[in-house]
Amino acid sequence: MDTVTVNGASVEIANNTYTLKNVNTDDKVIHVTFKPDPAATLLNFIVYNDNFATGEFTTAVIIDLGAGNEAVGADLSSNLFTVSARNTLLNGNLAYQGTRTVNRVYVNDEPRPRGYKGVNQNSPDYQAELTKGRYIVVELEFWTLTGGQSTLEASKSTVQNYNIVSSGDIKLDGKAAIVKSSFAQSGTVNEIIDKFEVGPKIDKAEAMQYGLYIHKDDNGVPVEGLPLYIYAHGSTRGGTQDGDTFAPIRSANGATALMKKMEKNAKYASHIIALRAQNNVQATPATLKAYIDDLVSKGLVDPNRIYMAGFSMGSAYTNTFLTTYPDLLAAAAPMSFPPSINAKQAETLKNFAYWSFVNTTDSSTIKTGAETYIANIMPLLETLGTRSSTEMKYSFGLMTNGQRRKHLLMEPIGFLPAMRWKLQFCGTIFQGTQILCPM
Image (cartoon, rainbow, N blue to C red):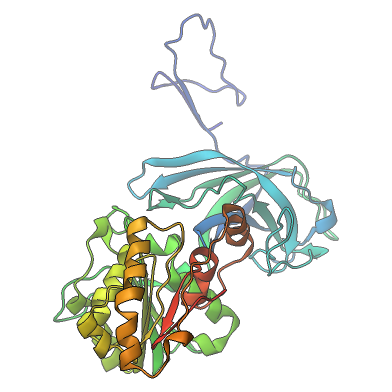
């Protein structure tokens, strides 16, 4: 023990013990703080967060045994460690507190998970466990049939504070076991979000809240002439906390979807703007255009390859932006909002690449809006374009909750922005003058 107070007053600790005597009323409040045992081996660990289709989750805590030390994988078990969490909002208020369920424990030769173990199937990036390694990965249960515990609390980012307690020896390869251990959190890691920066304000433009990812080469030099992808989130997903720029990319977000794609294939290399609308207050289209123009003027962005997508409120914003500046974007993919293009705009955008996603579980207003678009605008596009009506197809793809849950858990986001939403919002695709369902 470190300190003990009773009703706010400090008391003396003897032999690491304090006894509260003659307890016969309920008006005593005891508070105890602890410190590491000086005789214990202090081991650092990181809290590892990962992004999935539904957002960011704490999937593991990873213990570093130090250079030259390796644990024996066969001697580890899920009963060896107890993991607890106390997540707070940015203002320090409690958001979540509890003991996490340990799914499995194994070793690795780098401080990251080797995929995730599922009930019926493992994640696509699952790898076999190593026999020995410097890092002990304590994989946590982060999704069940009833949902999961994300790092967000009502669209607000949290600070993850974790504790680990071991219940036995940690056996090392070729060395004496660590009999008594204590653990200290050295950091929180998200290999995707950590690559974003808080978007800087530019001269001669209003301030805009956004996360900015600038793709760099192996020498850390920003790559010029790349595509730019812009994502506008849905209602409330920007949260309400001041300074919480990355709240939207901790939820379902096309920016993290593209980042996952870039991890696996360099041909998808792009710069990214992840917009944030705190309290649902969005930047004006003119403000966003100024920030885009700034990246183009610096040579970072290819002006012919600027793409935008959004969900719900962000979808409406995407439609507003592309109709305000019809010559700026190369393509757009608004999701869960009816296409809002009138007859005059349809003529301007007849050759524009446009994917609109609507789901059968969307509101009746959204579905009716999509149907109205099909009835009123599609014939205009047919007249303006070259395709016949028999080539135009429209359908809704329905996915059951069980199917959706399976995909959200087991498929880390590894799709292009439009394909990423195929799992959750399979609906319509409109490109030029053709509509089809990506089933």
